[in-house]
Image 1: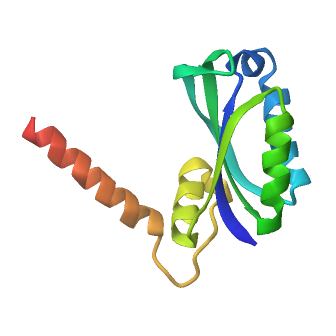
Image 2: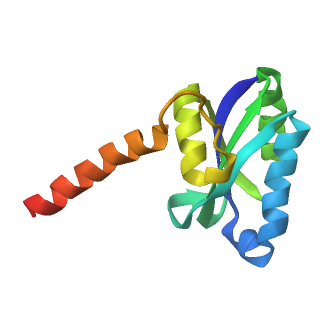
Image 3: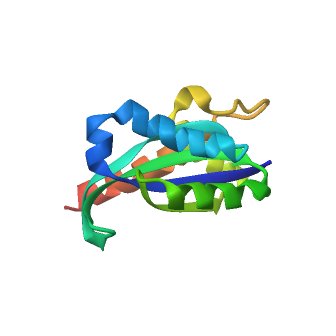
Length: 138
């Protein structure tokens, strides 16, 4: 099984009308491809930089999942046939980045590390230190 991050650009009008059905549609596409969903959430809803297939607005939906590589053709084909998914991008993720992003999106779904201190505090402390430095310089 390979770790993947999927960013799906969805029709924001259809998402606003039936957000649960829209999410179920995206997750169904992934499950048909043999994916196991680890975490998912809406990312950004708003105006697009340019018109795509007549759409001026869209909702970016982020999904982290594991799947055999052979499922990519199924995802691509299903997304092209969907009237909800405008565009999609799926990339492989290394385990450390995958775990960090999953824990940021859904802490209850994050894998537990055995015998190590929490990776979250190390990653987020570094981010917080950078933010504090930027605030103090202003």
